[in-house]
Length: 360
Figure 1 (cartoon, rainbow, N blue to C red):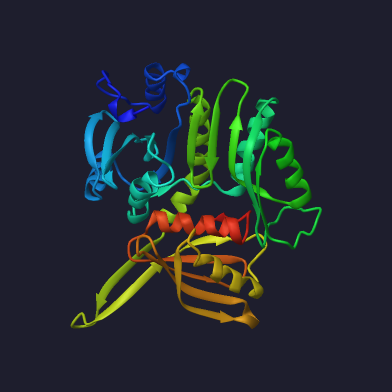
Figure 2: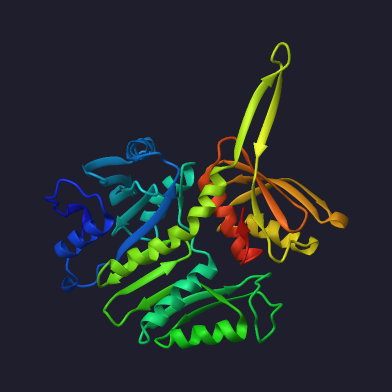
């Protein structure tokens, strides 16, 4: 299936569900597995025109426009990769739809754009939210089948574990009994899911991961939109809190020879707190390829549990200053607030430090 060759006779689309219904009509599931990737994002754009300007500066080519729906493309490895993108102007949520290859074409085009822009972030799905999605679907569809899952227990996971709760562990599982196996793993080993492959009895089959990529393999889109709405609703408060932070630099003195810097932080509240023995693991994990932060000038005062450092985002080059005395982690922008850097840092905290952390 080549979505970029889809002929659209409509003049505009103002609702994503309307476009998905149109897409289902043009590409019915009877034609076989769709394997369409849907990537939800959140942004600080003020409107679609600002969003288009950001796309073109990356650069993407905006091929066509139908109201809030765009067809964009970019050349990657001598091949033109295309995306439909719907801009929901109610919550400033761009939604990307593509049949490009997930292993190389999506990272080299879409995620390079997302990671380099300060105004947009992919929708991270925290482990507890992933479990909520799974539990809600299991409650609605008793015959649901999970064919694959990847799950993890971090060093400070705050859910119970019958066996060896102090052990950090990761599990990958293939099998049609994945629903029961995951429930057993959750109970006995205290893990939470990061990736799920699910088949619903109504014919919908999809894969969902913690980066917010949902791959529809069979069936209709309605269930996918419901999941995206759920995740975006959970992240609205995080976005608003990050958006209230700021960085200002003023020239002062008679000759304006000095600079006065004002940083307004946003806060992460840790239910279990951060202890001195957490710091080494925190620093190691931050540098991994998954999170790609460089730690600069760390300060650790063991007696007071004080820790501070400057973090440099290896993707965008944005910087944040972080500090904590145990229960609250303060995050200070350095320069313009980067929603992507801040969102990724918060997800890092949820996955590695405190699964129940909140913002404020």
